[in-house]
Image 1 (cartoon, rainbow, N blue to C red):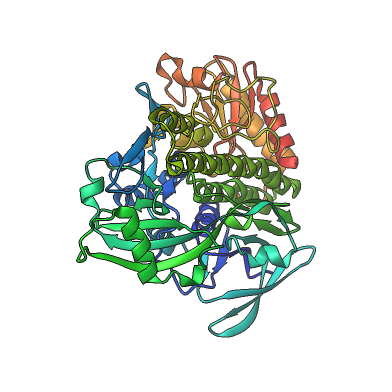
Image 2 (cartoon, rainbow, N blue to C red):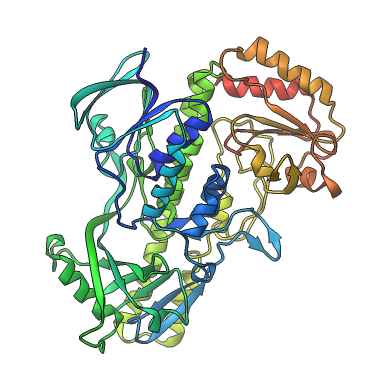
Length: 550
């Protein structure tokens, strides 16, 4: 007997997302968090399109959008010497999923602070019976056995032991779970020293005429300004030199002076600027040497630490949870072998490394712009060239929606990925195995996108001439004979185009590359697992059995 199926350490976006996903899949969980509640500091702010798609599925996207900045604030980055001083230039962002009039997703890219996101996720969890959250509870020790993992925790009522089938470490960059397993981080541990400053001020005179996601300043201090909400709440990240300053010296008064200098030299003495909190941190560019140790898994910052340039940290964390949760459910239900859980590391480590590398490149491109300006000798054309060279930072739709797995719980079909000039900024929809299944508008029982079909079970999407009767019989037989019948039904949902699902003009068949006779098998997390343009029901069920027996 165990106290819970999954014990989650950490109640940030990664841990809360994991709890939501598990409950939706029918698994119970306990979340332990050493904090007493939500951290009111904004921290992460970018909700990428893929993450917004997931939040749409969890019925929280409307609330997230209501807490987000208006869309004009997402459309550019501004580089300037000071907010009130000389503007160096702008980079127009291309992160919204409408390209040349074609809608690539039903969800937008949003700017919403992490504290607001956590509040919304917690409200969603409040209506879920299968989740218990323990605040003020610190992890002390983790031990593993053949069938369960035991965590010693200390909370308001003292020390106790919690047992679970699996444990998920979602406890941040200084993860106690990771440290307890002696898992090292590979990469650059100190890529920059920063102070996060949350403050309130009316910066409208220098920003309202040019709303932007970010305002980078160069002198007299290297800072970046980020508007948090419409109530004059801002975040400023101070980039300081540790050989000249100490992190502990940055109290609210010192931070306010640095911010004032980066706004401009001629501010009136009575200019109202109130810093509410300062948080020192070290920018890292690292990935854990492994994401799994027996029955313990790492997600989010516990597994990888990304420079903030690109805003992929929280998004990568939430998508870790999305990749792992359905695999827990498949194994817990008796429909898959434990080996399926190994595919979490196989699939997510390359994604984490790619996102870390791209984020570090973005940071370096900003550094080049700043060094040119600070040199005092750069020409206008040199500055413009540096801005042009930085455009991947602010244009990452391909990196966002083009996310793919090359190995893991998938069966390659021998095709190559779409060829694009820049895989970071350009996205071409494809149903090649390993890729995110494409969005196509539909109208089926309240679902308005093909993405709505992929949630808690596999989906077998078939061409109009695929023999649906055989497919359905095969699904049932495969579930009983090969995959076991304990727990939730492992059989895929079978949908035939033009019969179960309207496909006027063949848009879905074309987007998924299955034609009239083919079929595609999509995982619960919306990634394509298998595809065959000349499929049979037997081949489809054999593929599913093979995938789950891993």
